[in-house]
Length: 228
Length: 228
DNA sequence: GATCTTCTATTTGTCTGAGTATATCCCGAG
DNA sequence: CTCGGGATATACTCAGACAAATAGAAGATC
Image (cartoon, rainbow over all chains, first blue to last red; front, side, top):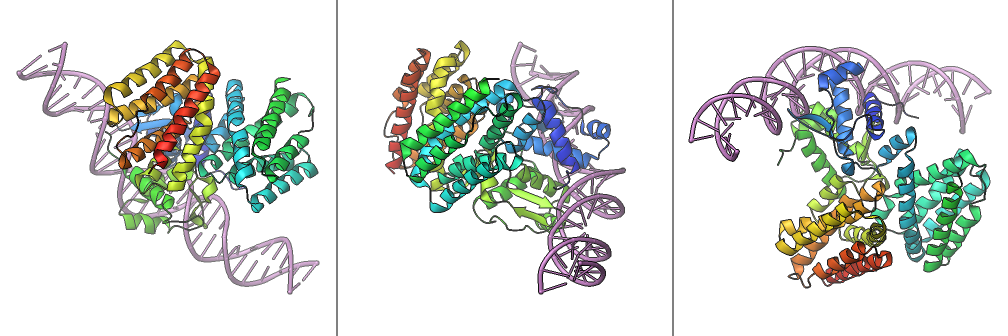
């Protein structure tokens, strides 16, 4: 595990502070010298952190005007880092719901496309992931990673780069829902059969079957989650 | 129009070079001193550019190992800046198709949700955008902006932040499809009625009607585009 | 021979301090 | 009241030095 650099740490701290509402849209940050001094870091490191947050759409800075938080609509909420920051503290309940809703829109359609376009290699990746879930179980870290791999493989099997780039966002949602479920009830239902039916439909090039199986999987997962 | 900063310019140049395949995944960049020297800029500015591209998932850099291009699957292709860079040169034909396919998945579902959840303010925004399209026409810059505003208003009316953050990606697709159509045939069909039927369905809180109207709009737009 | 450990050299990361450029704000003219 | 033009605060860029970390080689151990 690579050690975190100073600019990464500052970007993470500032990013989470913004996501948690400690800095609100329109708020102006202190000047570079004051801010860097307050954090006991050089202006260089501080500026690179700012550059990261600007790249993620959360800040904008101009000479004389200063650096300020952009309106929430411009934030790249689906950026992997931003998602990680958002989930590092208290999970924002309505945001999780929204992310899950997005899954409900994307994944059934992606499963249908995957049934049409998947090649053998991607099918093998799905099988491997399924095997990983079976062996490790969803309670373990490895099992959850396999779960994410399964969903990622489906998105990649669509052969659509734009869709595939949503994999990390969907993966974050996947990770969070399972963690959420486990916190309250001790894994009330085995989700493996749901995943297997999606897999067999995709393997059989059954477009509507894959769509419906994925929709069913998500529906059941949502039901499990709401029982908390 | 704000003048472009040096680090922005370098990030844009390097980003487009990567997107166009001039630097391929796994390739290592020259060291910071050589690269900055070759561009006649300071290491500071060059490093901030690198930081931007790392934030967008296109580069990774570690001491001793150098800075290298990440595998394509990690690029944030839906990031507004990355999309702008991708569209600045030759538009990558299959990528545009993928983006359009994503629209086809997201927008009908979003329209359905918007029909259920829209409030008066968002409805007014859609009406304004529609009026803008009517007045300026889709040939003008203002008309195209109004078109994007319409689609953005629908995504915002879902009251789902994750969905709304796809607005800029969808907007880029919208902009590019109209530009693509206009290049070949001189606007073969008036898309305004299609938009109006989506609007009336959303105004009437007609969920399935909105979904179908949006699907029809996209279907027709796709047909127009393929006639090139 | 293969694997683990240690060392080192290369590359990014961080710091300091100075100077530049730009956009906001204010003020004065029309 | 509107518009233009300058003062000023702020981010931006530069230069050069030092620190930290790690990939890769050399060596030690089994």
